[in-house]
Structure formats: C-alpha cells, structure tokens
Length: 194
Image 1 (cartoon, rainbow, N blue to C red):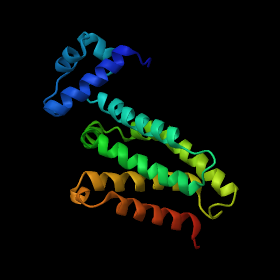
Image 2 (image 1 turned 180 degrees about the vertical axis):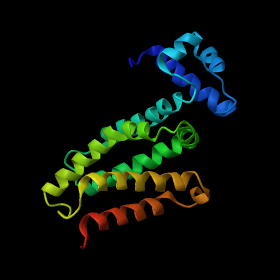
Image 3 (image 1 turned 90 degrees about the horizontal axis):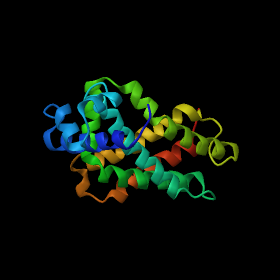
Image 4 (image 1 turned 120 degrees about the vertical axis):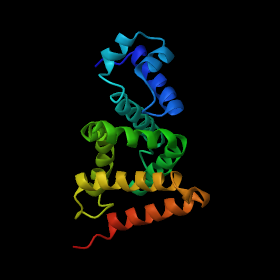
C-alpha cells in the first residue's frame, strides 16, 4: 500500500470524526467528507472503517519510536536508554491517551492483533538491538533471552504508562511510577537467578 497525502488526510479525518462521534457512530461518509476525498478513495486504502484503527495505532507508535530514537544517546548505558524509553512512553501516552483507548477498543473490535504485532515490529527490533548490545558488552546478565524479554519490557512500560494516565493514578506524581518501573527492569536485567 502506497502511503500518500490522501491516505494521511483519511487517517487525520478518521481520528477527528471518531473522537467526536465514537467508533460506532462514525461513518465512512463522514470521514471522507472531513478528509475532502471521494468515498471510492477511502476504499482504495481501507476496506472498512474498522481497518482505519490500525493506521491510527501505527501513527501513535511511529510518533513514539521517532521520539525515542531522537532522544537516544549512543554513548549512554542500556539503563539510561531504558529510562529515556520510559520517559518518552509516559509523555506520548499522556499526549495520546484518548486515542490509545480508542485504538484498544477498535483493535479488539477489528480482531487485528496480528496487525498490532506487525505495527510494533520496528520498535521490538530497535529495543532488541539495544539489549543485545548491552548483553554482549556485559552490562546485563547473559542469562536472559532477549527476544521475549524485549516484548515483555515494552509491554511493562506501556501498561504502566497507560495505567497511570488512563486511570485515577494521574493524581500522583508520575516520577514514582517511572522509578518503580525502572527499578523492576534494572533488577530483571542484572539480578536474574535461575
């Protein structure tokens, strides 16, 4: 699928209409009217309104990964890198919390968890590379299996940020939650016992 300006217009319009009306009440005709494109154009990119949800999720994840890569310190330790990932994840989750909730609901409705994994693959690959380098240099225990650990760490960080911002926890200081997540991850990477 070629991504062009019309695709982006449709995704932008979908975000706006679905935030205003909710997923169920939003229609393709409302989306294309907002995007300023023909209804047939919509179907060149998406086979249904539900198919737009992964595009919205991908946009959020691409924003997250771009900010992470932009903030990444090449000379930093794996622990500085993970701390930065936690900070950026909390920042992006705060900024996009409404859309994240919507994406979870829409992804479940669309039964698109395979697409979700595909969307996340570049993020998995990037963090896995960081962890492998740290393992090779002896910064983390050699006993951990990096590939499954990568997914668990991303899940832990995102779930912690989402629980913080999408529940009543946001009344507390976010630094406490971030510190607890970092402490847990650092312990996992250095104190592994088998």
